[in-house]
Amino acid sequence: MSKIQIQEEKLAKSYLRLDSIIARKFSVSYMSNTKWIKLLKAVASFEERSYRVTYKLVNDDQVKISHTEQFEEHVDDYWFIEPSIYKEIEWLEFTFDDNYNVPSLIEHLSVIAKFPITQTPTGYKVLGYT
Image (cartoon, rainbow, N blue to C red; front, side):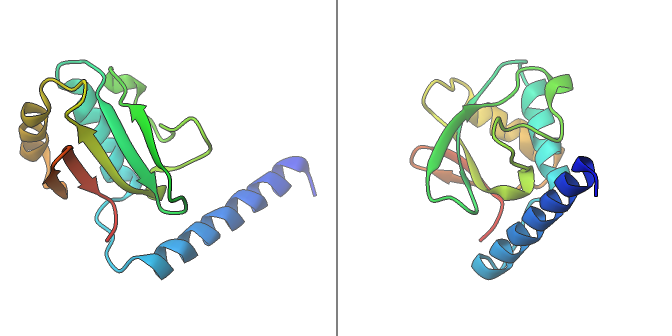
């Protein structure tokens, strides 16, 4: 077996483990990889600026901080630095900290698609799962 085949097999197993975690922890899935990409491309196209976000992955209790891409053409299948995929996002929040125009961004997103967005005391949260 080649190194590439071994790597592909490990990746397939990690996706199966991820699917198992999601099935065990959540009853509703709101977002797919395609929907996350659509959302993040829409964010990048709005004012062409980066937005600070906090997010939580399904297999980690830690809330992490990142920034969205500033240009739509930079949004692709792999946004995170670590080997993560969009399917792993439990939720992502556009926080009011350092984000001057978050309500206008959320209005822009609601015109594009019906994303599962709820307002929180600290910003607007997009739900991946519940």
